[in-house]
Amino acid sequence: MRLTRRTAWGAAAVGVAAALALTGCTSDSGGGSGDEPSMSSEVLIPVKLQLQWFTQAQFAGYYAAVDQGYYRDEGLDVQIVEGGTDIVPQSVLADGSVDYAIAWVPKALASREQGAGITDVAQIFQRSGTLQVAFKDKDITTAADLKGKKVGNWGYGNEFELFAGMTKAGIDPATDVTLVQQQFDMNAFLAGDIDAAQAMTYNEYAQLLEAENPDTGQLYTADDFTAVNWNDEGTAMLQDAIWANSDKLANDKDYQDQTVKFIKASLKGWIYARDNPEKARDIVVAQGSQLGNSHQLWQTNEINKLIWPSPDGIGRIDEAAWKQTVDVALKTKNDQGATVITAQPDADAYTNDYVAQALADLLDEGVDVYGKDFTPIDVTLEAGGK
Image (tube, rainbow, N blue to C red; front, side, top):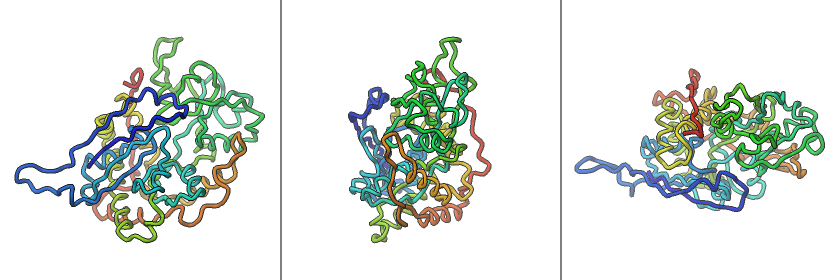
């Protein structure tokens, strides 16, 4: 399997981008040596998967599926294409440059409304990983507590859970809070310029716990902070999903069969990451991620929490969660007065047909696709995430 990187340095204001020095890396394609029988890469179906961000454990399941040979077992030679600051994965999929893409549902729905022919075929994250984090002395534990505060948000379509939460709590985002454009880091928050900052459980929140508390000389702990969780507030939106080409799904039998195989192997990779978080972390680190070992293990563990348990089977799209995502995307206005979408998505926006077949195949193989006994591990973060 090939792991290649697509470097993207855009003009978008993303603080972490400048710190990421990207280099190409390729894994062994799995060919044997001597007289050992092996499947030549020439007989495998080449498949490109576009990620939505740089190499990190957010995508551990796909890297694990390559490393463990799960894609190869399905006859696929999967090339993982790294994302970046100016790459829109659903657009790359829509223009035919790749076969599948990982994207948040609301952002992909916006692209669909603009003409991108893409379909959600497997909803990997069952829960939202977005928080609004505050120092404990700010007494911010719910969306209603944001009133009168300096509230940070990244923009670029990441703000709608926050705006929906404030609106639901009776707060007018235009007048009742001071909105602060936040970089993709926690520097302004730690400097006191933001009272409540946007953070992903698996990334920016970890950055806080990797930072030194100047009052104690020790690292911050979770006891120093509070967090508003949009899953609890009822405005969470579905995030990482596998998207496929809608036209090919409708007209290409080979692509339909390939999609089942691709989903099956990807789910198997995520199951591996669930059962082997340290090994999954090592696989991602070996692919050249610029994030440290403890940060990557934290990220693997937190991503697992967003997936497991999966009561209906990993990847199956829950209709209630989909409806909530669409409702927020359709009705919530950001500070520019815009909504994510302006009309209900059509019936081709998502399907459980392919993931259902993949799950059935895995169950036939005796694979645990539900993870009902999943227990997160304890992760100790080091300074700077090392």
